[in-house]
Length: 231
Image (cartoon, rainbow, N blue to C red; front, side, top):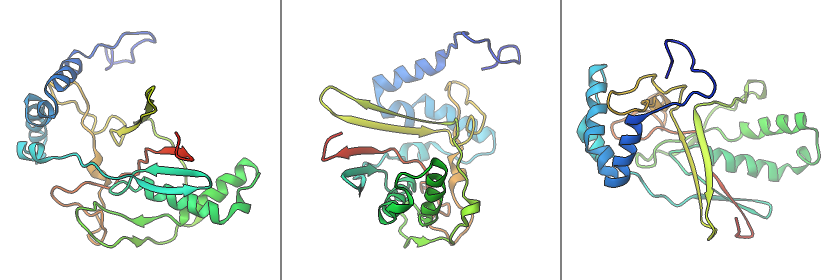
C-alpha cells in the first residue's frame, strides 16, 4: 500500500484488483469460493511457508454459527447483542445492569464522573468466558483496581449498521485484531491475514485456553437497541 516506500498522497486512488476479483468470486460462488477454492489454497500455502499449521481441512470444516442474540434491558430499552464466544455483549449487559442498580452515580453528573462510574461498573464484568462449544463454567476473574482500568479506541476494527425501508436491521463488526493483522498479505488474495489467535489465553485453566477447532474470545459487541420493540 506504500508508494515508493512512502505514504501515498491524499487523493491517490488505491486500486485492489485481486481483492475485487476475489470478492466477485465469493459473490458468484458463495462460501465455497473462500473456504474450498483457490483463495483457501493461497492462504494455506502462504501460512505453511511461514511456519503455520493451517490445512485445507481446517478451511473446509469451518462453519459460521447462527446464535440467538444475548438480550438484556436498560430502562425502557431492550439490548440485543453478542453472546459468547464474544465477551463484549456479556460485559455490556453487566455494565448496564450495574448502572441501573446505581442510578445516583450517573444521574446528571459531569462527564468525568460518568467515566469514573463506568470504570467502577466495568470492574464487575470481568468473566472468564470461552467458546460455548467447549463448555466450562464461567468464573469471575480477580477484581480490577479502578486505577488500572483504561479506555482506548483502535483503528483496526470496523462496525456499521444497515437499516432497510422495511425496518430490518443488520449490525456488522469485523476486525483484523491488531493493526494490519499479522502484517502479511497472502499472494493471490489481496487482503491481510488477521491475528485473532492471540485472543486465546495462555492459561491452561482458562475457559479461553486454545484448542483445535476452538474460537477465541472476542471483546466485540455489535448491538441493536430497541425501544418498546422498535428500532
